[in-house]
Length: 449
Image 1: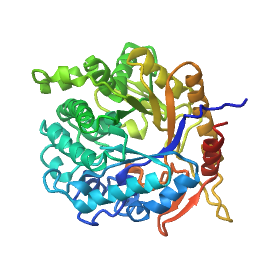
Image 2: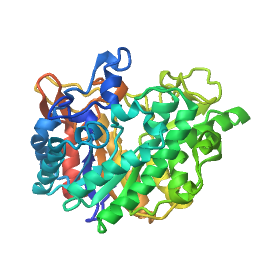
Image 3: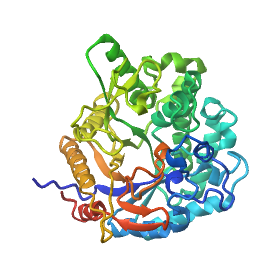
């Protein structure tokens, strides 16, 4: 069967600042929460840090050359908060802003539309020391970042993403203690959910006021959640997991409410007038989708990633024989169709871009230096086929930004998991396009699977 995407369909790639930039102490950059977290013994696999990562700060032209040669037309990147505001607020680091100037100009020179994400889990450690997202002042701190970056780049950037996967950094960072800043605090989690929701809504309105022609959106992780059984306990645990993993930000953005399952944690931080600010009129929604999770109240064999899950929800590993990535994530392409349909059927009709999708695989280098990652090509083929199905069904899906252009620092997994279309030898910083890169390039050129 041949699948063809519309001529206007965008093929690109996504990246994130801390995962690729490196240059952690270069040109006046301040300290971020992932700097301090990754330097805490025992937090990151193998003691890895993002100090150097892919050295994209110095090698971005080479990396964008690869995106251009791969026939991509969009490049999504994020802003490292501490690079432009070393103290979190106040003092501006001109060298940091100048880097993003150069990056945007280099994108445009190569026919790549720059997509800017204000916040992809980078946070000022100075502000975290004052409570981070649990502090209501964080809304104003974030708006200062948004104003600074928008004013600087609005003449060249049209697509703006307010946040990347707030459900993930809020739950893993504040509730489950698995990501920076590493908190296990339901109250801090509830405060963070509300303050991020306010920041996202107010930030979107601020960008529109500063750049009236801008396309303003945000990026949400929408992954499948199902109960391990039909027992009352497992059903309740699954509903809680879905609230934490999906609805915690879908509901306030599109309905102006919070899920009932987490309301007790969130509502203590709601002030008069807050709820009227939450609902946001977006120009587009970015969806990141990777897998689905089976949830049990008391699973017989809880996965390591879910071992510290709170609130009665536990993650049950897929059954033996289930196709999975190196992350242990179930490969189930129809899930991306379901995520798109869920937005349309339960939340809003608006343009959708898939802003992250991909998989980690062993990516062995052959004797002649090739990386024949057929498993990644098979995964991408399956998920893109379901995106084509969504378009055929009438859903307005306008683009696909693969995760990721480069192998990179994969948060708690350090450098042990590779998602990139381009292999990075972290010792030499040599870039080697994988078989999936050439496959994706051909797809972008022909728009055909």
